[in-house]
Length: 125
Image 1 (cartoon, rainbow, N blue to C red):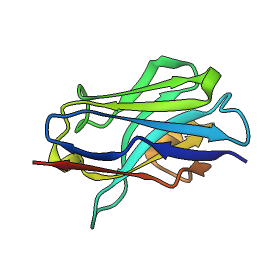
Image 2: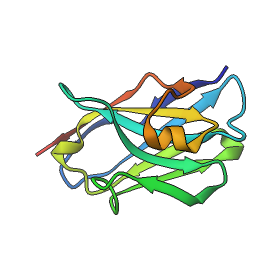
Image 3: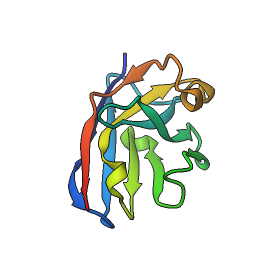
Image 4: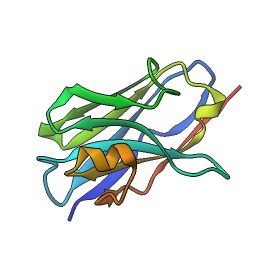
C-alpha cells in the first residue's frame, strides 16, 4: 500500500505562487507515474499534470496550466511537487496527487491505484 499526503496549499493573491508537495509512505514510488488533479466547488475532478517514473523528460500538462505549472519529482525523497506560478482565481480548488504504474491511466484519470486526501488552494482576485 502507498499512502500519499499532500501539503503546501493555502491562500494566495492572483499572480502569486505556491508549491505543493506529495509525500509517499508505506512503500517506495519506484516505478510509479504520478499525477496532480484538482476539483473546484461544483465541478468534476480534472487532470492537471503528470510525470513518468523517469522524471522531467516525460511530463504532461492540462492546457489550462501549461506554462504556469511545473511538475517534478525527487525519487530519493519519495516526493512529487507541483510548482504553481502566475496563479489565477480559476485555479482555486482542492488539489490531489495520485499514483499508478500506468501513466496512461493517469492521463485518462481512470481507476488510479492511490490518491491523497487533497490540499486546498485558494486564489483571490
